[in-house]
Structure formats: C-alpha cells, structure tokens
Amino acid sequence: MINLINELWYLKRDIVSDDFDRALARLAEEVPMSILEYPSGKRCWTWIIPEKWTCHAAYLETLDGQHLIDYADHPLHVVSYSLPFEGIVDRDELLQHLHVHPRLPQAIPFVFKYYDRDWGLCASQELRDSLKNDRYRVTIHTSFEPGKLKIGEIVIPGQSEEAVMLVNHLCHPAMVNDDLTGVVVGLEVARTLLERSSRGKKPYYTYRFLILPETIGSVVYLSQHEDLIHKMVAGLFLEMLGNDSPHALQGSFQPDSQIDRCLMSALQGLDPHGYTAPYRTVIANDERQFNAPGVRVPMLSLSRVEPAGSPTRPYREYHSSLDTPAVVTQERLETSRQLVLDLIDAWENNQYIVNRFKGEVFCSGYGIWIDYRINPDGHRRLFEIMERCDGAHTVADIATELSISFQSVWEVVALLKSKELVWLSRTPHPTDPHL
Ligand SMILES: [Zn+2]
Image: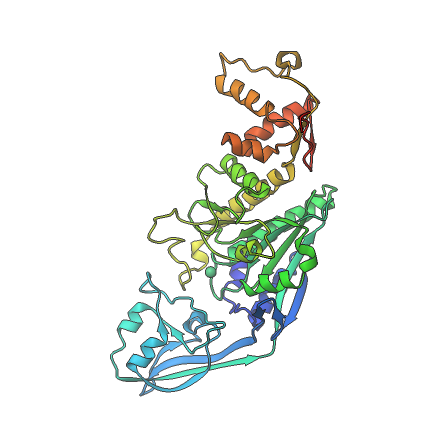
C-alpha cells in the first residue's frame, strides 16, 4: 500500500484531468477493474459533468520578475479549476485571490472551485504576510476542454445480487491521507475478497468498489445505474486511514438500518480505541450522495479522525501540502484493512436467528449452561441473547438492544447453531404464534 502511495500521491489528480486518469489506470493494473467513462457536459440528475482542467503554468512574481509562487514547485499553489489569468494586480486584489490554510502557517492549502469559478493561487500564510509591494504580476495558464470523467469499478459477485457499495475518492492532488489511503485500503480489501472467491469462498453479497472523483463521481455513477440502486442494501465510504488518530465510524442517514446496527456493534468488539458517531458529525464525503433522497442507500463512513473538540480535527495536516507520505504508516493501513475485512465478515454473518426450540432451552441438557456463581455476566448474557432468538431479531438487533458487541452475540449464536437449536435466515421468519 505504501509503495502505491509513493508512486501516485504527487500526481495532479484533479476531478477530470490527465493525472486522475493516470492514477486510475495504474490502480487498474492491481486488480480486475472496469473503467467507466462519461463525457464533459453530460447532465446527471441536477449536475453537469465539468470539463477536463489542465494547469500548464502558474506563478506570482514581483514586477521585476522575481518568482514568489510557482505551480512547478507544488501543484497546490493553484486553485483546482482556476480560471486562466494574466496581468498586473494591486496588493488588495491579489490578496482576495490568494488562499492560505486556516491553521497551518507554513502549509499551502488545498482549495478547489470546480463550479463557482474564479482565478486563484494558494500559498503559506508566511508567504502571504511577506507581500509588501503595491503591485504584483500574476500568470495562470489553465485550459478547459471536453474530457471524460472516469470511475473505476471492481465487482466481486456474491451469491445474491444485493450489493454492498464500497466507495473512495481519488481526486485530491498531491495529498495522501485524504484521499489516497482510502483507495489503497479499499483496493487491498477488494483483492482479499477476490482471492477468497477464487478459492471457492464466494461472499453472500455482491461487493462493488468504486474509485471516483468526489461528489460528482458518485452522482454520475448513481444517475447512470438507477436500475441498480434498489439492489444496493448497504455501503461504506473509506478515507483518512493512515494517520495516527482512532478509527471513527460514522453512521448513515438511517441509524436503525441493519448495516448501521451491524457495523456499529461490530466496531465495539473489534477496536477498543475506535468510536462511533451519527451521520454528518465526523466527516462529509461521497456517503452524502448514497444517503440522499431518491437513493437512500445506508452508507457509513470509516476514517481515522481526532475526537470531537480537538482543535486539529479531522487531523492536523488536512487539506494541505503537509499531507504527505510522512503522515501515514504501512502498519496503520494494515490495521485499517483488517478492520474493514472484519466488518465485512460481521455483515456477512448478520442474519435473523430462528429458534427451533420452544420455551427456555434446557441448557444443562445441551451442555451449554453457564454457572451463574462462577460467571454471572456470561450466564445472564446467554439467557438475554437466547430469549431474543425468535426469527424477528438479527444478530445486530440483539447486539444493539443489549448494547454489547456483535461478536459477543455471534459467539452465543454460533454455539446455539452448533447444537441445532437455531438456524439463520436472510429474511425475517418470526416464530411468535400470535403474529
Ligand atoms: Zn478532502
């Protein structure tokens, strides 16, 4: 994962651009991937696909020709999708078009104006503060031309056509944690699922991994696959998975959905340092498009984000030139990759638990009784879980009701199943005779 990051991070991966295409083509060498293409100008629901944008050169100089800012030194020096501009401007006008990072005085900020267009440059606060001349010369050579928005799609067919959407974006030029880490973790998860399939372990759900430009990419994909939306039962967005912050799992717009209940309770059992939070309270990304009206796919988001209240939330180097490979480690990427796989395993196991028994189970007769004098918590938990095995509760429902981890419920369910006391169903199968 680190090798791919080192190879791709510095590319100027603006939403529709040659470098975005290069990065996507390189990723497609790693796993079987279809590259979907949609032309500039195409209407997609209420949106229009923008033109391909290229910056050929851009700099700020003093009137005697001293370069102060140069795109050749760092791609973030120009606002993504900046209009071209050439001329001498006074200091006040320049400062209206010269963006700085709100927190990091030495960093160049990431600024984009894809639709509300203007010309603009970006610099460190330190450089901005040093500008004392009355007038400066600005040169921005950018071009807008018809292009193709590209989306990478990896499909891992399941036993069912019901689909789980795993989404990450690739459109942040010369940055790493946001957003390349989500892409490489997603890619490795896809690779593992493909390997399992090739060994005959086909998942129940079909998994669709999308690598796209943020927001517009999701709108384009969904609007061009309307027939698939009703099959999308769940989703997870991935990004910011290499920095040194705890895992944050943000819920979907539908907090009572099965995927919310499952992943939230599963995280509890998988990562003692991780935390969960409601929709739109951690970070906003492509999950917004999937959760939106007319789509309503419950999509959660997994990232590493400093806890609420931290002054450097989401993380210190966010949207700046300091978001380099130095922010991430292979070890943290590996931990996140394993966590995503474990979350997927929990989701695959989340089924309705249907009782074959009536009344309370004769536990000692089945050898599953837990002595309350030795293990009072285990004893109580066994009974609390068993009395909810009624064909109307899933594993995740029980975990949520009891505020315990998915895994602790699953352990008991697996035991009951091994004794043939319950069976598992993908659909509700209530056994209450009054229903
Ligand atoms: Zn971002």
